[in-house]
Amino acid sequence: MTTWTTPRTWTDGPVTTTEMNELRDQLKNLDERLTVLGQTSPTTIQLLNTDSLSCSYYASGQTTPGGGADTTLVFGDADEEWRDSTGLHDGTSSRFYATVTGLWHATLWVAFSTNSTGNREIAIQRSTGYEFNRWRDVSSLTSEEKLMATCADMVMTAGQYAIGIVNQDSGSNGTVRARFQWRLVAR
Image (cartoon, rainbow, N blue to C red; front, side, top):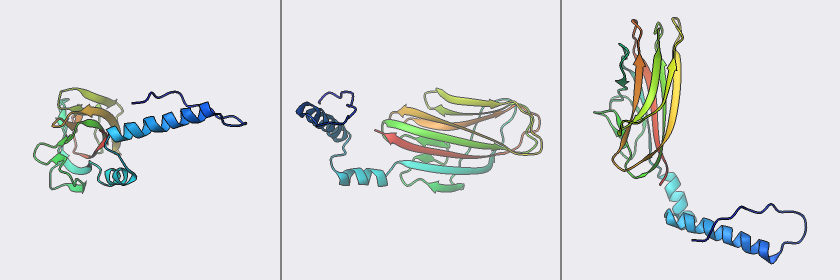
């Protein structure tokens, strides 16, 4: 594979042979990188874009966190499924699976119900036990929902999974609404 060099900043004046050769080498390097990824033609790139590995689930009131313990958010098969054309979600375990090795992006939104006081936390956790971006809110909201969000980019091998975690330590635990989006970013 050719070596990537810092792109030149073009200035006014004639373009030299050396500058054109640098441009040729940069384009060759880019072409080689796309070929390694299996993107060998504009047609292939289009097919990869339209057949993306992604899913989005919404859960309305199936999880009631409490007692200050981490609770896995439940996204059952009966929930509103926005997209899961490739079987990334397991409705029994509420796990979101990486079906191929690559960089995966997860986004989690959680709405805590009214009268949910005390500390509220959300996080995304990988099957290896590693936790990403735990967020904590300590405000005492009593009359309106509290919306929290977090996201993570994770290098996953095929078969690993991610879950959404919620925690609340108040005495007035209410159900939560949540959305989890999961998609492959790069192989």
